[in-house]
Length: 220
Image 1: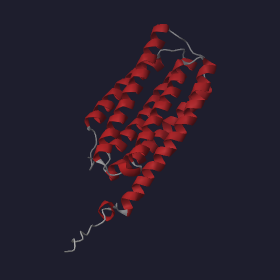
Image 2: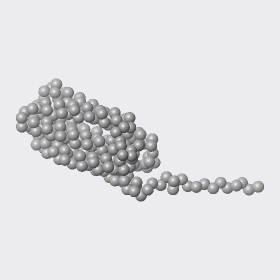
Image 3: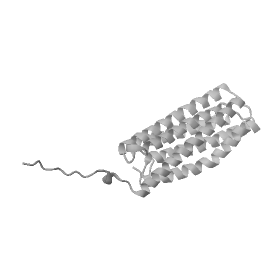
Image 4: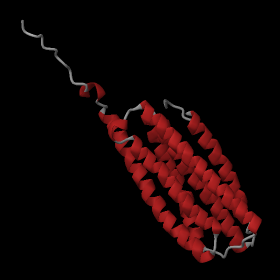
């Protein structure tokens, strides 16, 4: 008696994503790569200018750029290979983004307190002022596009990574105000004081991301 043949159906068609979703995923990866590239350039300029001017704020801003690049790599990780469309990967990505928020908040807070306690008076850095002014204008635009793509994908992790890009803009504003006030009015404490507020915002964003909160309009 012949053994009956069991017909199997391939699973790939069931897992195939729509062309529109694939387009959005490619856009998310492209935006992440663009942000990563910019943050590495920002890191080099900020650290170089910070060392030249003995500015802890600028050096800290440069280090922050590397932390923000980490969030971009998390998005690339999320939308690559078998992780695409995985709810488990999405949740892990949210937690990794949250961790980067906490690292950022801790670093900014520690450096701000050290600057305030030490009473360090950095020299004027017009390169740093120019970098902060440019970032203040460009980062909100990039964050807005990232957030739109994240909502369209229903990806809370992508939306939170956009929030970190927006946080970079806030930190740039604080840096810009601090550098200008320090250079023009001699108010050296303005930068670390504003940065402490940014650290508090980062903690709030990190808590929401860890809990899976703060994502509306169709996110998970």
